[in-house]
Amino acid sequence: NYVEIGINTLRIVSVLIDDRPTDFDVWNPYMFTFEGHAKHISLRVGFSQNREEISELPTPANGKVFTKNDTLRTDWRFGLGYGFALHKRWTVKLGADFIMYRELQSMNTEYINEDNERVTTTREMDTKANGVAPFIHFQYYITPRISLGTELSYRITSAKTSDVDTNNLSEQTFERSFETKKNFVMAPTALYLCARF
Image (cartoon, rainbow, N blue to C red; front, side, top):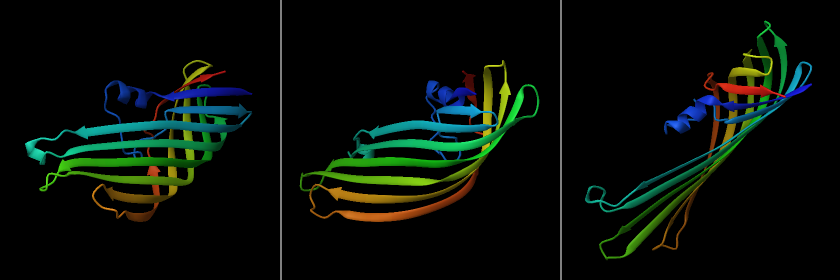
């Protein structure tokens, strides 16, 4: 029996070069992975949290409107796999994950209207999603305790989004709700550097 801890090196590189991917239907979202192995059976957990904040200062070009967008997304997965050796250095794991994520988006604008009143609008979106993802994982052992891994998965998700608009000059609150279902293949867009203990 053993435990493996891994880190997604592609996401580390994207942070270092300040070019973080934001399309998590394309790029594997998990920064960290933890796996416990008992013979051929493995249990795994993956986690990541991503935050992006963008501000646009008021200028004549944008009508002197201040805009601030803040996005916080947290991803989790809990999976069960079956692994076998293809070669002395290569292993393959087949399994499925229960996946879930939550994304909070806040969009704020401020400007002065024609009556010289300060107008503040806020739009808040809260998305909660879960689903399943069958996967095939390939792992190459550089040494008996250090390996590189990547995977191909098919993700089936269902999400609910609440969308709320408010304005400081109005007592009305506009609320909308959405449901989204997705089925798609996630290509091998992660490269995990793993250590065995």
